[in-house]
Image (cartoon, rainbow, N blue to C red; front, side, top):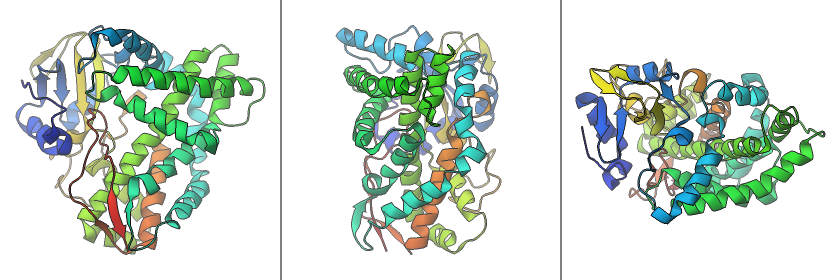
Length: 403
């Protein structure tokens, strides 16, 4: 058991040491401060992910206890609206509701469909790299890692450039759900209204006049009665936010790893064949976009002689499982030739990330595009600042010099 504040600066800065220590000493750990279980070993996460009937994804809708960390008492009205909205998202649903929405959207996320987007992604990568001057200090997050996936996911939904800024502003509000600020629900609730005002009219325009984009798929679902408009808007919001935020983290964390391991950058530049795919998978494992994810226990279960009770909160810790020495040889080593690479950065089973193929494609094109153009990547400042987020591994900025 521990009462460690998971938002403490040292945990946010280096989750691998903190959660790695739990993995070796207390792999099924009760955190009394936040009233939740932490699962940190790779095989325990695989077991958990293969048992969604025990570990519910619908934790936002069904967790009856107050949010953690605490929010202001007079902000619970905002929290209820946030919970109602988020609870309609694909990622927050169990079967059969999860499969109903996933089936609506699946067509656009198959490997074949995603591969057809590669020329657009590659073109976007090249256009962004063209704006980078060799030897110039740049914030790679704002200049490259952010606009790339934002443009791609917006195009996939059928949303045009004038709305990019709004999408980014709302995304930053949504990401505060896992932040410690006690007034965060107020900002998230405002973001819901802003996205609803953008997305609902666009979905309605596609009812009866589909355009072959994801908003059209959701419009068909509304027309056929498979989902209602509120659920269509919530899932469009999920795709918009998760569809670019996690890829920002993948690119920034990956480039950071390359900057700290220049020999791996040389291997990427000089490699051939499958090197782009292998490098992206190692970036996903070594310092992935997501640190922990929530579940809610449906019934009592025993894990490593610990009794976990129905209704209790569980967080599975990808940041620890992806460096479990029981599953990975030399797990602390950043090695872009690692193969196989059974990381859990996209989950597993029925809740395997719907956008995994797009994230992989964007990572491959981003890393290879940068490596083809620049012989080196160097950190401008080693004092990195991370968002105080329990879920995501998110840099605030990443200043580098590319030569």
